Image (tube, rainbow over all chains, first blue to last red):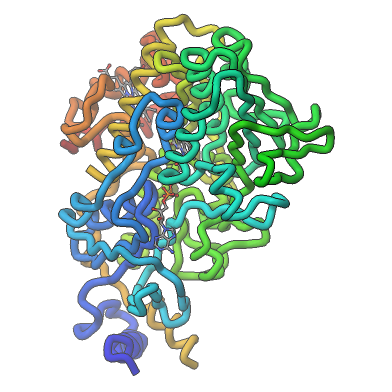
Length: 422
Length: 96
Ligand SMILES: Cc1cc2nc3c(=O)[nH]c(=O)nc-3n(C[C@H](O)[C@H](O)[C@H](O)COP(=O)(O)OP(=O)(O)OC[C@H]3O[C@@H](n4cnc5c(N)ncnc54)[C@H](O)[C@@H]3O)c2cc1C
């Protein structure tokens, strides 16, 4: 038997015998929490745990030494900023006392409470947090697979895909047709496709005025829809056309050989194709057994502990979080609640009923920002928006509010990334 | 047996000594998503951490009633009762 595990079993036996003493003298002196995924959710949990309870041994397992943030990556695609402005390292996370392992977690044993890494190492945990973000459902859209994504990028995980889509746009001749396909709910960042459409509209209007973007949607309604559509009418009347589900917008297959997207009503051959495919929780969630038939993870909204596997918490995009959209703001808000709950649970106390906030800012032009905000709490086990709170920026807000919100949007990105990585 | 003992151990080993001195009241930790606590973050959004609690409570009440204009705070403030706001304001006042 592994020595730490033996010590652990002995500790358990001892405390079972002496019920009044929850902490036997020879128990593991500090609890161990392993966090998988160093994005907005995972890096936040790791740092918040250290801040709340410095004694906890926190290990953050993250595949990549450099994190590339999705928020504002639509600005990179539209040529408004560089990919380097999206990138962050883990030095400050380490400085807070978190052990950062640049590794991919490949196995979870919830009984033994261990996580296996790609390099063969095994980490023991008292509580595990999975914050793996999303994976693409490569089996969901006929014709779309990892090879196809090199020709028809999704750019829904930021990095090389983002750079690829930008290069394709830059090398497209003026007068070309770009086609984007947007997925059905739920997916990462509900307003994301429409912010992207807007900033591509801006790029066409200012750089390639004869070009056009066709958005083929598998939905009839989307986040901040009227705000976006009003802005498109005002700013990009010749550059963006949106086709809803009921107008035949659902893409049923793609062909990377000809850059064609097919719907029930026709075929669209694109000069540039951006396929935003259906998604699911990051793969390690499935491996750990915390996903259900939807591909996402049901959680307890007070502790973010999996409803399926005790001892494993899930935060961020991977969760089924009721009314909360999958956003970086949500991930950060949930992560702080989860860290507090974990500390309480490790101490043997009951976590408090939380309140959470989300905001999604979107740029429709560099000086034109809109947003949606919400305040949430658990009701009957479901994260629910508090009636009377939240909502979007006013439809009839004056120009100066749009300018102010564009500035607040950029400030939000600096603020959240400085909290998570800075 | 192996599985059962694993669960048993996890349920029984506790570390009451790790608890922080005070809890953040519900919602309080989410404010820093927009109101920076890291001085390095350049932002026009006003600082609210370390601020007088009565002042924060009054401003939140004005946002809630609409008497103080703003882009977003009215919709955030309406998600909290006066008591909740008071608790958040007191906690914020204790933060840097
Ligand atoms: C185009 C676009 C625009 C967006 N704009 C906004 C916006 O303006 N505002 C907003 O709030 N949100 C926005 N989002 C959404 C936001 O990016 C996500 O909601 C957020 O990243 C979710 O955080 P997360 O921590 O759950 O996942 P991620 O941030 O994706 O982090 C997951 C991390 O886990 C790591 N990982 C996964 N599996 C493993 C493993 N097995 N081992 C080790 N590491 C692993 C990954 O490498 C990754 O670093 C946008 C998204 C897109 C695509």
